[in-house]
Amino acid sequence: MEDYFFVLQYGQWLILVISILALYLVSSVHHKTRLKGYLVTALSRFSGAIIFLFVDLFAFVIANLIQTYIAINGYFKNKSIEQETSKNSEDIVREAMQVIWTDGDISRVGEFYADNFKADYPFPDWGEGLEGLSALALKVREDLPGYREDIEELLISGNEIIVVLQISGYHPSTNEKIDFRDVTILTLENEKIIKQRGLTDLFSLYLKLGLIELPQS
Image: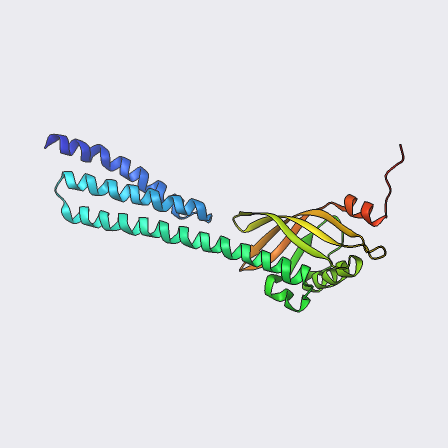
């Protein structure tokens, strides 16, 4: 019996520390940190069940086992939501690239981009909000007939999606096919693209359009 009280005496402090850590993690605004918090909560509650088992406090054992189940169940539910959100974000970006940029259907801009959308590119000027974005989507199709965007790589990190694009079209004068790459980072909020920034291989584009020439050796 003395050994049981020894376990209770020192084990309770360990459980207290784990419980405080679990509460700290669960209260985080970062989704992945909260997920860890659910697991730590399950660990602290299961440890509590074991401690109370030693001292024959079965009501507390049952209570802690129930809380263990709730914490683990919460972890898997939130993990599932995270995966669904990632999938939805990917679908939104893929469809936006197809509908707005490849098909040129600017009537659907509001489906994919937020009203307060902002772009951060060194060039070209995207203008302001949805109006500027729509104008640019039309202009690129005029400057490069047959304009289309094909996704080569797509990476998801939280609410941001990184896309490597292969952009192609035809020379407005010679009708020669032109292609170049673009790396884009999109930020999503409430299932819409709120921010977009990136870098375009303008050197290759201008070279193929004949706007610049390589120096002769």
